[in-house]
Amino acid sequence: MEGAPAHGDLAGRSALVTGGGSGIGRACVHALAAAGAKLHVVDRDGPAAERVAGEVGGSAHVVDLADADAIQALPAEIDVLVNNAGLQHVAPLHEFPPEMFTLIQQVMVTAPFLLIRRCVPHMYAHGWGRIVNVSSVHGLRASAYKAAYVAAKHGLEGLSKVAAIEGAPHGVTSNCVNPGYVRTPLVENQIQAQARTHGLPASEVVEKVLLDRTPVKRLIEPAEVAALVRWLASDPGGSLTGASVPLDGAWTAN
Ligand code: NAD
Image (cartoon, rainbow, N blue to C red; front, side, top):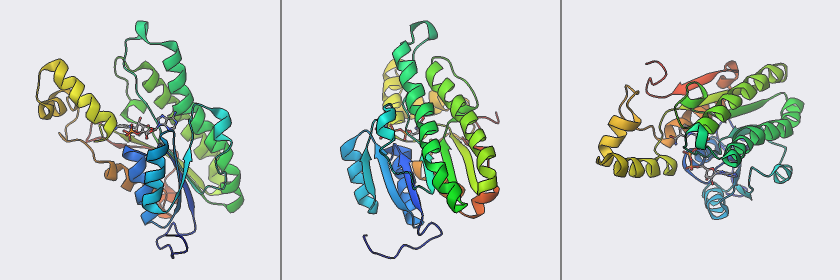
């Protein structure tokens, strides 16, 4: 890829995707690379980051986003920042481990803040930038047993809006995308666990358990989320900022 001409409206732009080694992040890496961007793939899983970066001729950065010092070593000359890395822990409030609550806030709120803080001076200097925060329906709604995840996603929503307001005079947009259940390793594992717990085949777990509140009875594909992220990063996407876009089969409408 090195030296090959890049086509598409993101040619000449640099993009950084956290959690780019798997699932939605990997799909975003491919969509932004197809639009011409030069990719930085950030993940704590080194082999996954290297593999995905290799798929698109990008650079891998093996970083644990809970480590604030390590974030300072990441490139700051970024035009498109996708805050995507995340993790889940399910437990009732009175049993929720405080250290897990803190870790989830560090990875899913503090790291996006540190990356936005680090990258906006370059974006402001060029009068153009795109910040896309991969939130969730749980940035807009709550579910039992997901205290840390719901709190973090709601925090990310607020951070994204502040970035939109401060970035507006500098040509920088900031938005959240809010997926329902997406077919990624994170969710495939939940399906198997729920199938065992409920004594149901996996197909019925998807329809009756995961998609109970969702009118569109199918999982979302990572590429569908990535297509929205890619559009938000485009020039026409400059008209949309400070928004949260549900991609949830009408879950939040229901
Ligand atoms: P995934 O588990 O497939 O990928 C997450 C990636 O983040 C992994 O590569 C993992 O190594 C990386 N990561 C996790 N903690 C990290 C850390 N401390 N430092 C660096 N990298 C770290 O998950 P996914 O389903 O693709 O989720 C991506 C994002 O989408 C998350 O923010 C998640 O909350 C959000 N989301 C997922 C769904 C879904 O149904 N899968 C729905 C809504 C929102």
